[in-house]
Length: 327
Image 1 (spheres, one colour):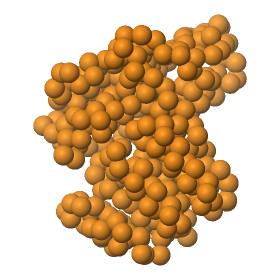
Image 2 (image 1 turned 90 degrees about the vertical axis):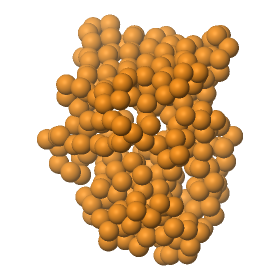
Image 3 (image 1 turned 90 degrees about the horizontal axis):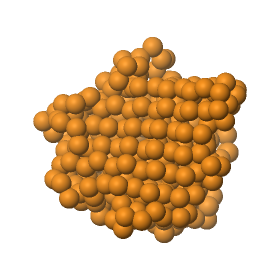
Image 4 (image 1 turned 180 degrees about the horizontal axis):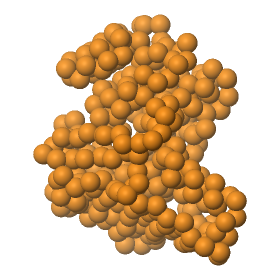
């Protein structure tokens, strides 16, 4: 039985906590959050011990740390955990810079520990099915891919950290990294990036458009928005056009996970025919737990997470200079 500690009991920490209820070969024994009400609520749900101090929690008999903290904290807490010999599952994006991300990945290798990043879109049924259809050759060779990920500004964030792009990277890093990871993983490496974004110039509103030229010649359009009104339903779409056909999906019509934002609050409601263990946030954690118990490489590696932030960071550079960026 893998003993787990969750660090950060906000939106994603709470989502992860519910996922562990359906994982049989792991148990959350400790949770950590500066906010006692959130930390104690998660601890009560899981039958775990609550800690306000991360360093105190690390003294516990723990095998793995699940980091659900703001992006600017990922490096510090990942390195601390690995220095203490703990496997680490970290929410996306891996870090704010390539240098920080490489330091995390290298530390995991040095300590011979498992490390993975929560690029959960790979576990969403619609995205998984699309990949299967493409691999079966049903739409021929993909030539044009379009993705969208649009909703209201995440005003529920702790201390409003999303608003400071030095801490969050804005939607080009925090939001569309989901699609970028999925695209690279299934359609190959990116050759050139061109992007437009408000870059935080409009308070509580941002929108980005990114064009990627893939090394295999395919063209990708990625759209992400924090500009929808409060209360708008968060939605994602993808459209893949191949030489023999196309496949598309719209989460607002079919998604098993719906996100609602209103008046600074945030909730995830599940409306799905999937078994609990098949829910994406549960499945991604289960896969990492299995990598530990089976002593193998996780499905999502640190190196893959670095590839994704390289593209996002190139998009940020392009959006500021107005020029395309070669990778």
